[in-house]
Amino acid sequence: MQFRLGVWMAAAAAVSFTMAGTGRAVVAPKGDLKWVDQGIPGVSAATVDGDMKKGASHFFLKYPAGLVTPVHHHSPDHYVTVLSGNLVLVVDGKDHAVPPGSFFALTGKEPHAARCEGKEDCVMIVDARGPWDVVPEKK
Image 1 (cartoon, rainbow, N blue to C red):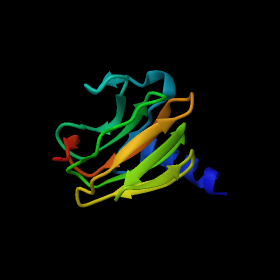
Image 2 (tube, helix red, strand yellow):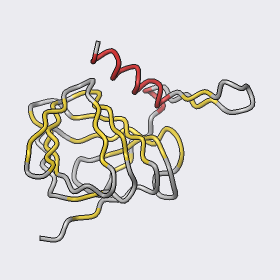
Image 3 (cartoon, rainbow, N blue to C red):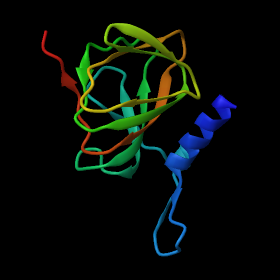
Image 4 (tube, rainbow, N blue to C red):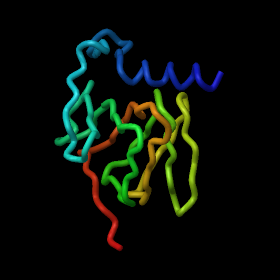
């Protein structure tokens, strides 16, 4: 049930509809995604709604297998569903396994690190509530 809910949440984020009939629909088929390098080796993103640099957005985020990030934070609150890969989120020095179908939220510029373990890339769908950034934590 948890996996199905996570997949449904990811699908809902990628395809948004306004029920009143006066809104808009966003449909982003997998084959139409445009993956853009994020300036970190192997990390890429594909925006499906909004503008990552200017404000709130929904986007796919891909980490290559084996990636280990340093401790960092993001300015906007963000809500994430893992679609594939074995992601480990590190918050307050504690590892949290976040397998496919799992959800996590990071708000208030919460410092964290992440690892993509195993042989499969980690792919997530992110709901960012403001312009996306990556801010390294000071040592």
